View 1: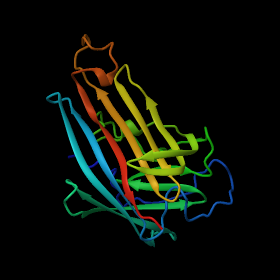
View 2: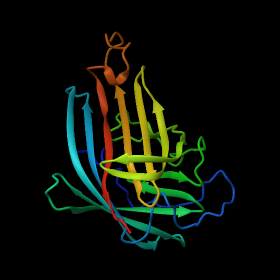
View 3: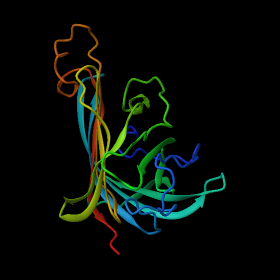
Length: 254
């Protein structure tokens, strides 16, 4: 399974953070955010469902994983600042034991949450949240001229993140949250060759509670493909890419 598909796994190299807020100065704590807790010992667990599209044989593969993220210690970032470790544990079946797979890193600077995921630098949140506020969340990710979302960075280009809901209640798997924010990351329901849908919901004092990505590229192969009038996701041939859903199942309570 390609490592981009499930976890957006974080590498340490090339990790340099900066403040990218478009709001100017704020009074927000420069080292934390209520919507992405970075206190040592905090943890969250998810069920991950995915669908993988392979245009080589037109196969569609459904997979399931369980993910646990634990907040570790602060470490030196090599440029005079600090990062927070995020330990990623994985298992296939609910009854299995988790095993440590990767280490992520995150940092909040003046209300801006940045992460580096598989050596790709994201701006996840720009606080304080207000409905409609936008930012270029993938501005530090450069296209690699690939044509497959399963292993290329091209599909990250041009995303305009914005807050679609702020302060809204949310329920998932019997868990209720009074204060959440929904970040719309990309919304391109493709009818030509590209289909990209992405959003993430964050809950106060918890972190990510729901994530959904649909990244599919159509590669019919012939100009006269009979399904060209259908949306990319509804075409039965020539699709490559993935769906992935994160569902919160548990988290550390105070």
